[in-house]
Image (cartoon, helix red, strand yellow):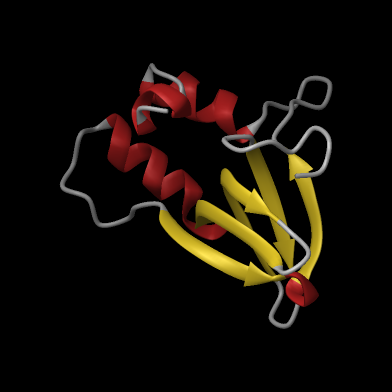
Length: 104
């Protein structure tokens, strides 16, 4: 693993061809690619509301492998000034951390 990006790190993954963005828990990072348990950012807010209201799951995190040639960038999910991280947004709405929810 690359320094700072250990297993169970919360990350934002930007992909190319096609362009997509995912939030999730990093499972592994290697020269072959990235394994992530995550959700597309287009569905993040709907997923958070579903978890907060304890609704029957229509959305869930999926475990996926992405070959390295598709990876544009990987960011640690961290706040930037007054802008919350996705994990902070999840905790604010749901009332528990992503790690507690996923039992990590």
